[in-house]
Amino acid sequence: MNRLQYFVVLHDNQWKISFQGKHYGPYNTQKEAIRKAVDAAHTEGRKGNNSQVLIQGQNNQWRTEWTYGNDPYPPKG
Image (cartoon, rainbow, N blue to C red; front, side, top):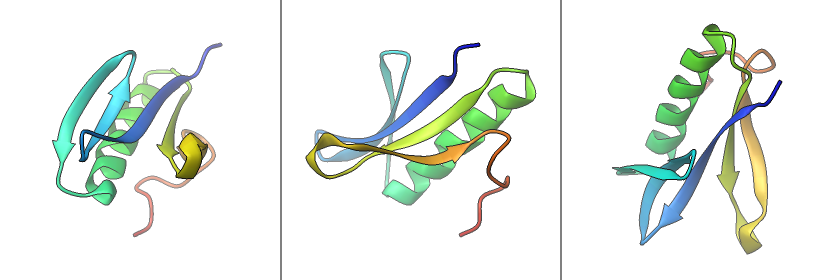
């Protein structure tokens, strides 16, 4: 089964969520964008869709922030 991926990105100096080719936001902080992405991914996970949140880091490297079924919800912090 494919995994739905929510990408938290800094786009045009604003934090946004990229999902299936579209940008959502902007959000005031990276933390707020992450929380919204995790909430959306959790909702999809409860529907039976594998889902995950990734964050764009230095040199355009991606790191996994949260994965449905592996990480606690709501996330700590």
